[in-house]
Image (tube, rainbow, N blue to C red; front, side, top):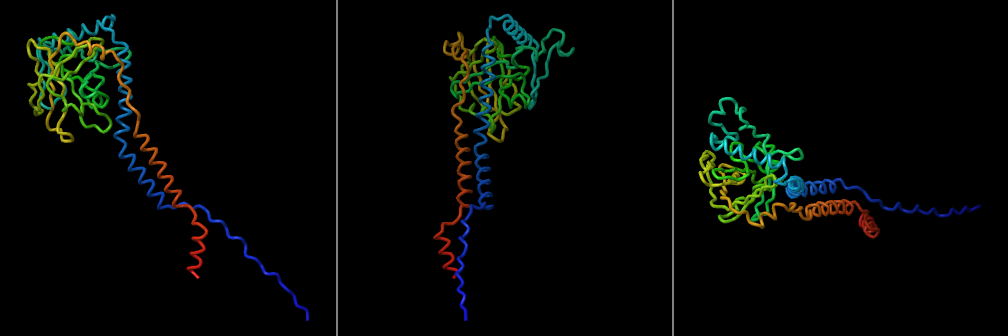
Length: 316
């Protein structure tokens, strides 16, 4: 009898464990990233808006020579506008943005003497910025545009049509308005921090005028008489809504012109605006991306060999 010996067959080597994507981990990571983006959005939007506004202000400032022929012409048009506005007057109804003009020019549409040619005064071929406002107390440096439409107030600060243009002069009250509490921009959010004795400055086509805050008050929207000019005084009024998110009243910051303009204000008005600081929101977002990626990788990594042996032994 012949005996046949069969060599024992060896088991094939185990397949090395592979990394596997964990769907629950991906969902958790995505939710974490979304939450981080929502949290940092106001910081990101405000930083980007400030970058854009700084460029706009810098461009407007570089062309602001009050003695340049076109600038001198625009300043003269603004002075004439203010003089005629004071002579004829204008009224602003409650909760309205556009004034109703009074006087003889109102009957013919205001076209005969250029008195109401508002959109073509304090304009430039290179920019649509009317003026620049600086409030050192709250580190504010923003462009001022014509009008107070929603689109305008999302870009910067608006000048209330029907009030004096920001070129100074006795018997004028320039009214400047801005949003408060926007997620994407600061605007007049800190206006409630302004106190009596603080200063703010306009740079309008190179003419620099500074106002000292004489009074701050909170009024109802229908108290429009608070925006009236006062004979013999050169006033400027800054307006924004309050309380934050409710907007049922108005904060008024009323300034009276300082003459001569302080040297420091003259110097600051010609300086380019400060560029926003380092975008720390980008560090936060970048860190969240790295953390989310690391979490997904960690949860999908293969188990260590001794853990797998223990699992087999336990199952046996």
